[in-house]
Length: 401
Image (cartoon, rainbow, N blue to C red; front, side, top):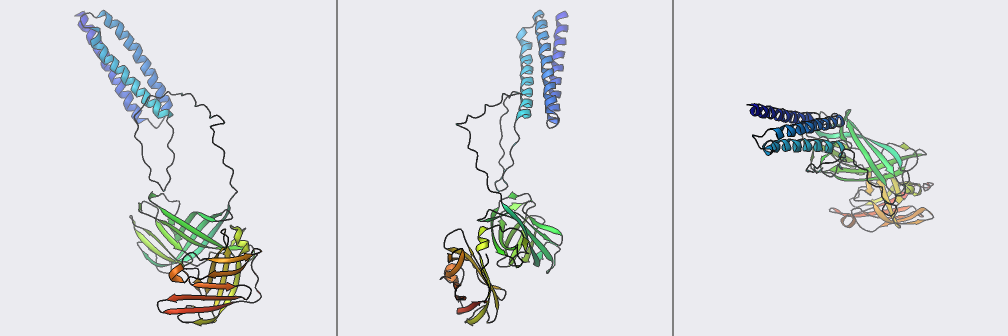
């Protein structure tokens, strides 16, 4: 009878210890993100108490002769293992590093790991030796920045309460290194509501491209910009898709996920003037002149007497320039593909531009410019026939420097 009472008491203590372990596990799950350090310390104290209790149980079991000592040590060892695993998991959660933010153009791939006991205070890893330490990259030159805006109008809208003619604003944050211009951020607001923002979270894919042209403004110390910008791809969530081309003076913003919408825009070729230093070194060497159409033949889109604006900017590639010729509100050259043409630059001044390919072969009409005579000839072949336009630079104008 005496031995049975002792065995019953031991079973009761084991049951109580199992309940404590289950409670600790539940509390660990409930408080995993609160105070991990304090909770791990509490579990360690509980484990130490359990070990002292188990030592006492072992001594008492030595006195119980009617049941082999091993029969109660099996669940006892299981309890010790359970407490050890629980504490190891808590320690792993405490010391594991936070995951880095995933690039928004690459879907995040989760990793499933098997918990491994990790010491709470691991020894710091030795610093790399000078031979293995990575070389420190040279600091980049600070970027020149500007904010360019275009006032656009809605031509058609579905899914949003926007009528044709509603006013929109396209705002682009620009950064230039002297040789090229990036677009770190862009936002489009219509009727006071943002319909596209590059900072919105991306849930899906993005096929992104952008291009920016810089030109001298009419007022000294100002510059204007033309932009092409695309952010497209299968996605869901907040970020809409967008395609803008101010050279063609059109744009569109749409979203296929709920709430779905599509807004088509008309925007000017160049932005409002921006004060400050140019973002491109080549802007100071650009040829910028006014001109007038003097002759026209065939199905020419340029009428005699139409006023024109010419801009030619040397590119980083030797012998190449970016050329735009707009006459009567229509881009006569430079709207087809890139507007890149062969050119001759002498003493930082453009003296000649030549493109012998028509739209069928190069995307733009053929063009020949001789700055010395001020004559421009534009020619193209279309379905309705071949046309030519003769343009004369206005006298007295000087190349921008």
